[in-house]
Length: 117
Image 1 (cartoon, rainbow, N blue to C red):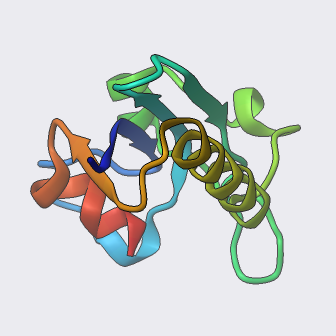
Image 2: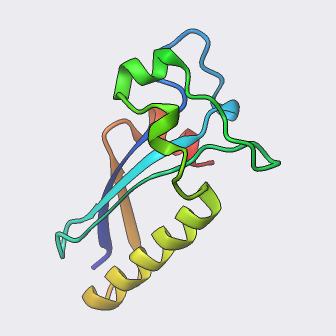
């Protein structure tokens, strides 16, 4: 039986905004819950450019999720969060004996999946 992970992201852009260009936006919060174990992984993420400089969270995005530049200023960057997320998924697979993973999100095809790319 596959591991079932329910996840949600918050980003520097909000779906539906006319100025949204997916490639320029970054994940600033990630939450995952394993259906089988009810264990969670949840963290804020400091959005950075390719040189490590913190990116600004637009006011329009802060209005959607309430997360500000100050909230993420001391958080880990995406590369580190990705490694931690991967370890979480591995641990849940180990606990459940699952060899595959099904990812479920509220707005996966319209937003989350695109941002993860």
